[in-house]
Image (cartoon, rainbow, N blue to C red; front, side, top):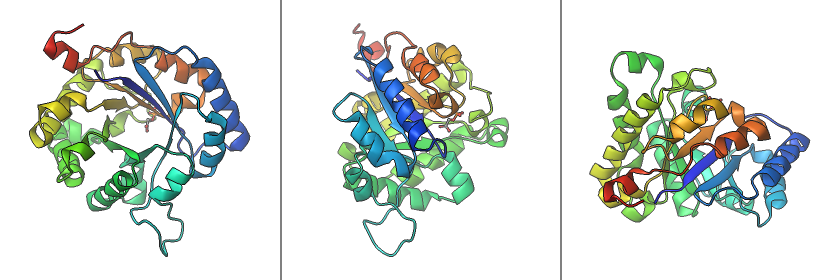
Length: 265
Ligand code: PGA
């Protein structure tokens, strides 16, 4: 069974005191969270060490927003996978649309980053998603197919099992405009079929696919209620404990596709 993963991407927000306050409130509010969900915060690089210490052994994951593909070297401003591990991270985002659009991360670069993350035993959350124009032109599947294969082709099945996918339609990020549950389900189903063709049904049934793009407590239950939506990647609403925890508590028990297919309850 796939567990919900609820991830807060803090982007370029919050200085240390603010980040500490938020993480304390999340730690306090997440005590007794149902066992079918896992929570994760993704602060800026400068907060990682401090937040890791604050979390200690408690049940809250820590991730970074990006990494460099090389292990070390003369790459001014780069942060390696080993540095992230050393800072206490278990997770890292790869391919967020803001990295693709504002920093020019190409499929080739993202493939290297994803492999560097896996080699360092980090768990990558690989983000894909179309722009509005591409959806309107009916090119969403074509685009997602390319983003998927450019970066994920050629992994060992055991490596793919450590990758989480995030579907983030660019037109829904930070716009207040969310994909309908039907769009999310249809697209997640398509992504799962790509995993199945490349890595087999078994890996596809286990792969978690998060939805991201203006997720809020008010729309989280419907989105998380879709069989192929296995969690949320949250930007704006993750900056307040109340809304982040509201989303984390939404959605009832996960009716993952794997369960449905086998008919188990
Ligand atoms: P948003 O961002 O929730 O503010 O739309 C989502 C994301 O970019 O991960």
